Image (tube, rainbow, N blue to C red; front, side, top):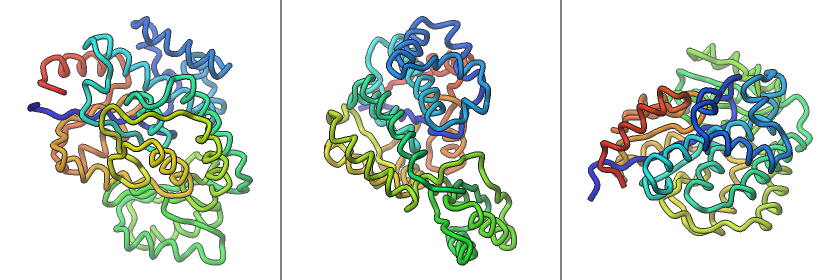
Length: 321
């Protein structure tokens, strides 16, 4: 019986910033080693573009994925070193948002580092190479799902647009073609949206426009060995805990053209008595969503040295798994 069930959550693309992980790199040998490993496997200097940019390079989907992954895994290794056991023996559960699913899969012991680095890189290449011209994503905040669906009707005659991520009760990410997105944004404002804007993303992720990328990823996953997670792992595609490797592969592939069900995942935290969440990686997007969701779970970011040290003190004092 544990007094607290801890979940580690891993961010996906869009949270990157120049300098992410730099102070951790300076202070922990395991972080330097992790960045070196990822760089060697990917044949790219991950630390350099994370710490120095430029933004135009760091924001490329393939580069972003590697940087966020290295940052997230570095923090996981700091925890493992401090507590003397693998992350899956500390966490009750793990979950990643979009690309963060792969960080979580590695940390639950399902995929080897070399395999997951190559997989993350290939996944980004498939998305870029899906052949979608004038595609992107937009954020809508302050509307109900019903009003967002009504706003999507404005895309008719302008192209394709659909809900890609449902992140909170009133926060949605829309994917599609630029002209269609602009029409939806205008309609969302008419309906009273607090925020409706295009994001700095050139790939319309998690929608039907990624079908080609889904096919390629499914074929790629056939060549990867995925073992059963050693602790609970939530799927973005089903919003359920998943353990069968075949199901995991299918969910990862299908999720390329289907939305991230983040709100549903958070709403299941009380069912599993998940009361603490730590976001491993850059930024505080996921921890912010969890704290605002009202699901009885206290979440914290861990993207810099100060945050990480605070987290380690908490974990050492908690009666965790």
